[in-house]
Image (tube, rainbow, N blue to C red; front, top):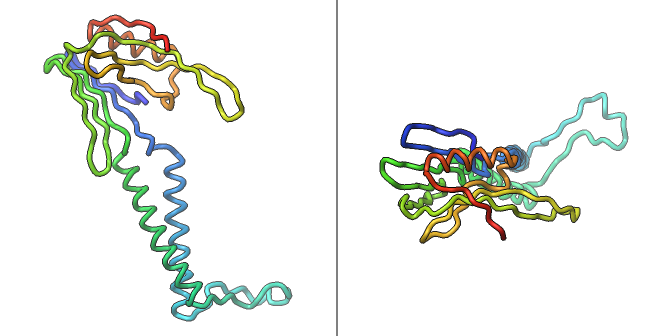
Amino acid sequence: MKDSVLRFKELRVFYIAGPSRNLSYYFWAFFGLFGSLGCLSLSFFSYVDKDFIVFSEELYDFPFIPESLYLPFFPQGLVLGFYGIAGVFLSLYLWCIIFWDVGGGYDMFDKKEKKIEFVRWGFPNDITLEIPMEEILYLRIATHTKTDFFNRTFKYEILYLETENNGLIPLTRLEDDLLPIDIAFIAYELSWFLRVPVLSLYL
């Protein structure tokens, strides 16, 4: 998403938020961390031969509640320990992706250097594409059609930069959730800045 834009006389920089900043990534990172710590705790209690759940004496009168729960270390505790270690590494991996904003980056239009630079942060290496401004042909707005899970059809627009050697380069994404007026505003700003026309694209 075009969350923020730096505007200077001869420079435009559009920040692109990566998919790793989605709430689902935070959910699975927290879920994996606390779940793996729980597995490691159970494995530790079973290793030291301790009960990991002890109920209060008032609940002992209920026949279906035991006085304590015991988990043998082999094989249950050992397996839980392996699950816990794997979960910790998976959670750390997700947190690294979130911290480095993998998939995010920026689009830089530099009239002084006469180049366009597309940068996407990756793991472990970033992805960079540089295009000379003289290769720019048009800005194009394309209307796409998509069918969702319930077989409902909806339309959305994507703004493209058409170049001589690299073809069509998308400047917006479906997940940006931009309204048509937002697409038009970005297209107008870039058209004015780059001095190129905006055309429709029929797919």
